[in-house]
Image 1 (cartoon, rainbow, N blue to C red):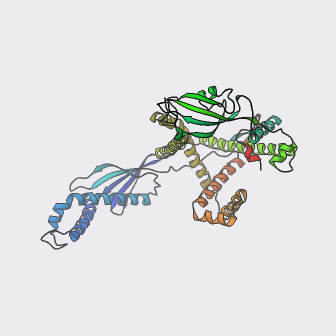
Image 2: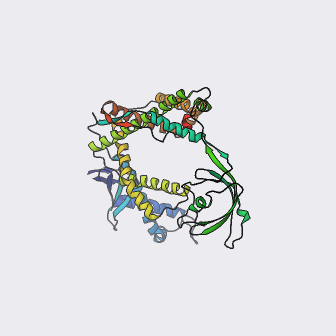
Image 3: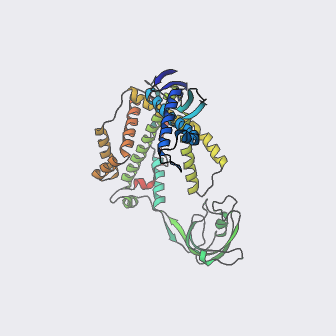
Length: 450
């Protein structure tokens, strides 16, 4: 605990936790009385009462009327004064608003109180040389290239009308008219030219069953039992009838994988060249994943080797943001999120919140201790790279970066990347020969069509 006289206050600071400070304040009675009298003088000057000119009401009468409010105002003025003095003199870096505790305020006595606040912990990272990491090999097989080609074929597939009964995998074009509770057709709610992939997992079972073997031009009656957890509240648990007219039955036609198919994706391209491009794309994506895995291992090794205190308010802020995203995703999917869902999600997400916050503190400590910096020239070069990568007008993008928060984000990303690169350059990386980085479905066909 450090204690000193700061202006008119006596202030001491205790650290019960690495992320917490308790500011103990003593305000001498003479200082309290001085500020109280200043407020009383101002109140007399502004006071206006029948029978007296403005500012001429007797001081004792004004004090009798306003003593309670003046006492509160004086105290509320002293608290932030003492807090600012403590923050400056004791070099505090608070991340929460102070909480007032243990107020002692008796007539004729000094005023004492405590202010409890969370601060960013002072983290010193140690033992970060020679972090042991395992790096997976990148190996793309012909089978993975074939799988990617199959996805490209599916992406290029078309549906063509056929004159036969519908089967799973066919696309049906339907006109649907719901019936009301009285059984009458509700023409104002007609849904024309609706597309349905027969046998689709997301279809209501009644549609898959009723439309098996349907033919173009056929009229059907379909009764649909909506489940109790159906996204639309208006339909939950209801049975609704539909008059269904089958406009068309279409079958999927996928192209053959040959030079013509490759040239359709990029003029003049052969199948051999397409396979080569796919392999390069899959290798690039696999290498990115391996690099991300190495970054994650760096964080895990640092956390294992260093004790990092995490302020509860930062965890709570992270969880609140995550819960907000949960609600947004549920709303987009037409689902409701219960209090139980939120509680379960918060509990499951807490370890990741702690890990990410610890990572922030540790990487910041590495940058500070190793004096890792980023210059304006570095940022300008990165701005030009981003403009070139995304096809932005360079001058307009530069102007955009300078006006908003984008420059700070770019600076942060560069600093973080340099911290990772510094640690990786001193790590002991072992090639994990029994672990191979395979292509994953993260690469979509559209990304390779160029």
